[in-house]
Length: 228
Image 1 (tube, rainbow, N blue to C red):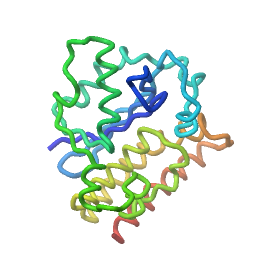
Image 2 (image 1 turned 180 degrees about the vertical axis):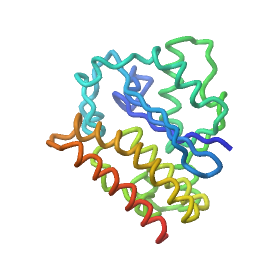
Image 3 (image 1 turned 60 degrees about the horizontal axis):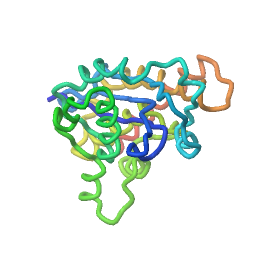
Image 4 (image 1 turned 30 degrees about the vertical axis):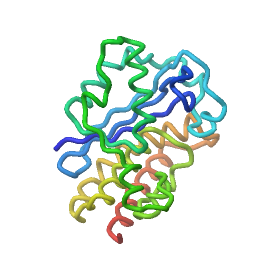
């Protein structure tokens, strides 16, 4: 079974107010194992980013100025998620933005949730843990998924975290499977952390620091999963 864990970052909270997607991150799960395949892109929204949203993800209009607009990445994104179950935390938020983007392009395009089955991890977590906090951070803590590098939100980094949370929350993985995922997660996290540190966090870091952080993130995540 092919599943795609999806996350987005946006210019604001409400797509009905004209806010747009600025980042999409997707991680593939095949037969309950994170694969080497992922989709990641930044998007020029052609509009301003709200201060509150920028404080969450740290992405600036200046950084997005030379990135592609949504129409340039739409087909590639649709090809990537085709025939996959989408795993999303608080699915109505991301689906609302994605469907709004496609509506701008072509009003005849059917909604994403009409093309792909949806698994909402927030809905599932609320049913599994009623009366408790079920944010991604709270679930990482509950399932011993190391999220210490989540200084700011990032779509690919959050998709990686959600993939681990989803697998733990719905039955987990074996130690061997987690070890096999180690290299794949490290490769994806190098790129995600490099973007976060070089572009959105005021710090001077070397490539060695970036690779070390990504390796530590993946190793600790696997160790924590083994203990759970």
